[in-house]
Length: 273
Image (cartoon, rainbow, N blue to C red; front, side, top):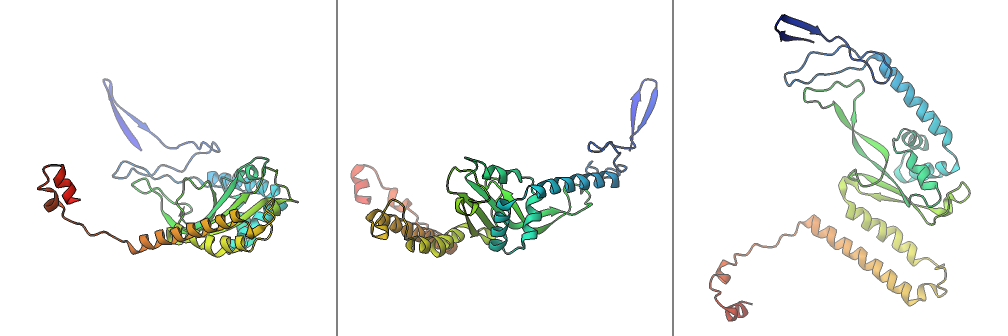
């Protein structure tokens, strides 16, 4: 690209030919002509792409080396719950930028939950150019990724792991200390997914539970009966809320001007009431 600067002594021409790479020090490919919007498209040189790919491979192999029986337990549960192969789940995990959350989940007094979303996400095409508006060419693809649950909207399947104590999670106790579950929230139907999970999985499991710890009477205990009643009632509330949303119930708009136009004193309000 060429630009001219006016000085008292005449025109001075300057030419920009290459941009240095912040990753490898090698130059980027030549800058393409500016678009009508003033933005440029940039293509990484083959050397830069190769270096980035090399670094990604090294990171993945370092993470793969960390995978022990605890990780394999999580991978196995995810594969069964979502319908992927264990190899697919492993590849997704070691390539995830939130991989360190797994180790934080295993640590003593660590994270209470570990969430995974499996849903359509916008993926940038390889070797994609910047468009004139600065955006990238992208397409929807199914992806399994780790999430904190606060930044991405759930539009597919949510798989979760919950800790049952503050103990460190080890290879020998992972199956006892970690619970696993799945919400099917396809198309963002979170209420339906939660309702199904509670009514079809959790409530039947609770009602068939024989060991209630310190409560020796089990299901005959009045407090446990009250608890199960509350859970059933909550599931019913979820069902009603979902049906109301799906049916899109709307109240008829009423013109109240004829009722309030003649209100002059407290007795008129009482009569109107």
